[in-house]
Length: 248
Image (cartoon, rainbow, N blue to C red; front, side, top):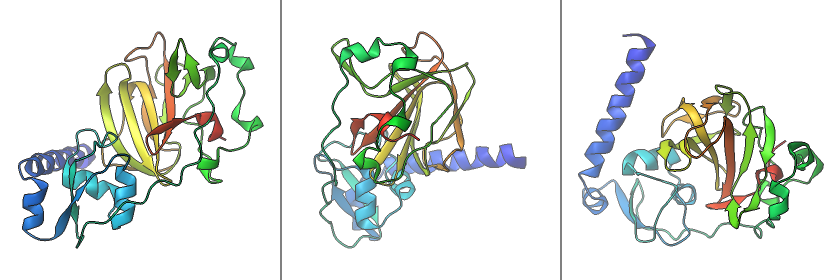
């Protein structure tokens, strides 16, 4: 069937598995043996849950067919394959949130917005910087904007410019959301998630493993975007952080 045919078969199998898992509740699966049910508490993330139980993130995604794995609400039941008992999830090792940039920063010219190289790494990076996800001009920084928090940075570049994973990880979500347009979310170590939004085209699917620098999407203007650019976010335990503290 060739590469295209093989990808189509794999995608179909993942869809069928997801549909099958939705029809069986986690407690029913646990009753059959081979795992337990974990009851999600406020603030827990899929990455920390997987690390605690020693279960790969992609397996948790597949076994639970999550609609939006970045938004785990308290009380959600997850099937944890291979676990013998429910475990407490340690709290994140989180430094204090970065200070917000004043609204005046947003109105500076791109050249006047501080570049990452002139500032120390965010403590949450733990000495491991991220790679720039695309080449472009920094047109909007992180911080308050018109009384709202701009939770990432915007990089203007021609439509169709490659968007690359900022680090090794697993794709949590690849699809479309209101405002963001087409977007990709990638989970990394350190309880980190990176967000790539307003894409013209996504090139990966949920559950895919990606490598640092691997092309995952193309720059576009979908969602609330007045021109082609990449909206890029860094989140630690779901909290937005200034990406310029991570990029090198």
